[in-house]
Amino acid sequence: MKSSLTIPIAIVVGGMMIAIAVYVAMPKKQSPSSDGINAALVRPVSATDHILGNPAAKVMIVEYSDFDCSYCKTFNDTLHQIIVDDGTQGQVAWVFREFPLTEIHPNALKHAEAAECAAVVAGNTAFWNFGDTLFSNQPVDPSHYGSYAQSIGINTDAFATCFANAGETVDARIQADRQNALDMGAQGTPYSLILVPGQAPIVMNGGYSYEAVKQLVDQALASTK
Image (cartoon, rainbow, N blue to C red; front, side, top):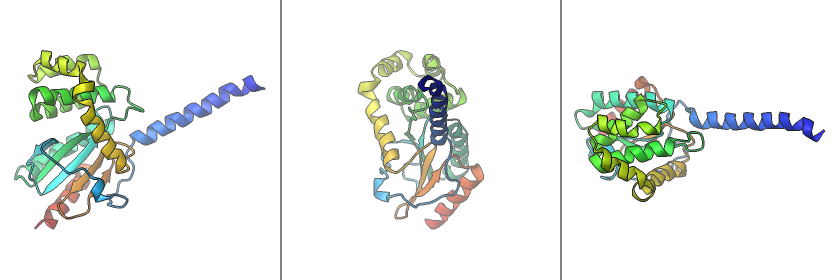
């Protein structure tokens, strides 16, 4: 009797694990909210962040993302368009923070390390270019990092040295980003906040459409006038 139950139990357990993985990876709510977020838990944007746009922008979109997340890939394109449309006047900026879902994406931490090493070796612009390359080539094979780095003009020797020593050079930063997301209650990616000084953060829990993000950003901009 014991052996006859082994396979059914294994199937049930396996199904539960798959369900949990899908739940973590998929977007959750598709309506913005500030409920459940303690503003004090949101790490302030600083010069150490990866910022696309004006670091002094009135409206900040802070995204916690995973380079292996397909929803993040689409949302990455969305936020690039938002910056093209609303960031050119210096009123809106985008902050990228690492949230590798290592529980379901075995290479997520490596991808984050590679992107951070791109920043260490070649600066903020290289970080954004490398990140875009990772998203464009999903699913990424880590053996391609060197060629990606070379394609965007990063010194490959310096990059390889940084990546080989990621535990000493960039992992603390990645884990700090991830922990900040978890402290705020993030359960999946992309997880984003729209920040306006003096106002409660607006949470975007999932891969919102361009139209939805544009509406929220326009409302945030209007509130600063």
